[in-house]
Amino acid sequence: MKVLLIGVGGVGEAIAIASKNRPFLERLVLADYDEQRAVEVRDKVGADERTHPVEPVDASDGAQIVELAKRYEVDLVMNAVAPNFNESVFDAAFEAGVDYMDMALTLGSRHPTEPYRLAHVKLGDYQFERAEQWEGRGLLALVGMGVDPGLSDVFAAYASKHLFDTIEEIGVRDGSDIAVEGYAFAPGFSIWTTIEECLNPPAVYERDRGWFTTEAFSEPEVFDFPEVGPVECVNVEHEEVLLVPRWLDVGRVTFKYGLGAEFIDVLRTLEKLGLDSTVPITVKGAQVAPRDVVAALLPDPAHLGDRMTGRTCVGTWVRGTKDGKPREVFLYQSTDNRESWGRYGSQAVVWQTGVNPVIAMELLAEGIWGGTGVLGPEALDPDPYLERTAAFDYPWGMKEMTPET
Image 1 (cartoon, rainbow, N blue to C red):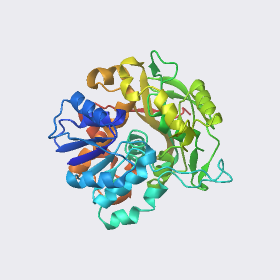
Image 2: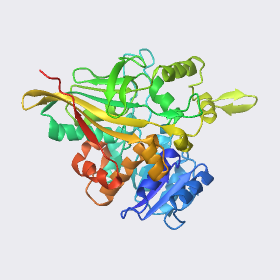
Image 3: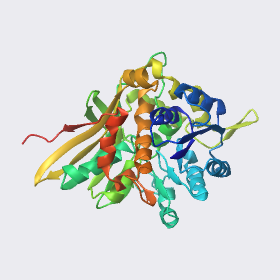
Image 4: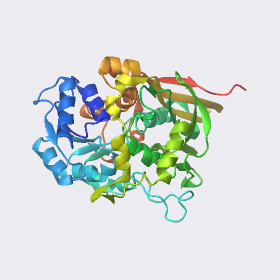
């Protein structure tokens, strides 16, 4: 398989590391706005120009992406940039006539009058509205194929296939005890994306209501994560809520993130000051978006691994019935930064994300996974995916949570 990787930040680097020396990969084109960053990643991977050529690219310019896809005769465009570029990368892959994969859906927008009650433009609407066009051309867009969304959705499909007869609720939960030495505030993932998903009205799905929204940081709960411990989690906007009900019969779907009080206070302050805005303003004659300023001030998550300690845990909590009896489980993946940094030179949060699209690529290249149109991970067989994780040193587990009667 020949792949055009758009975006070589922290997760893009993890993709390059995880895919190196896998037999399915013939070429991985490293394309980034910062060409020197792409060279840095190639050198870190220990690859050469033949297998890992480097190209400059502006992800907002679809014509550049189309030209690269055609010049390198790629089979797949792998989108690893911030989700505000998703539409241009998604459309470029379609124009180039190649398959597409991303780790976050196209952005939504809040309801103009009742943002905390009614869903409006939802995550992924742009992509799913074009599903018939992709299917008509025999192309596949596999969307939301990171860790969450991605592995969390595979867990949901596995639970539906093997562990439950009926599912009342699916809740994706993401928590960690990660700390970063030397920084008062240093998110382990893109702050641009974190602001987007945490300050937007969270979506919730219920079978009788469909999709609706709530206040940001609503429905706090303490969830006991394996290998991490209890973490307070709150509702945030996330793709699983929009993906899972499209393929699985479930009564309710939520996503809750273990942000912590300090992180929530910082996000609320950014919102109060207007620093979450993506609309450019003029400052001393220069046009700049406030959110871009915040991102520029914070450390690059790709370079925090040597200062990080702790674990991150992502999983899918499922509640329903099996053989007429109540059942409750938590399927999860936990990554220790000491291990990911020590073995692969990749910090835990980005490594946990970047392994998953590589597993998916391999299954697609081997013809084990496939299809046409716009599909989420739930639409595909979870068994070969979870079987393949061992080959990537990427273990997962299951915690029985059924209350004793």
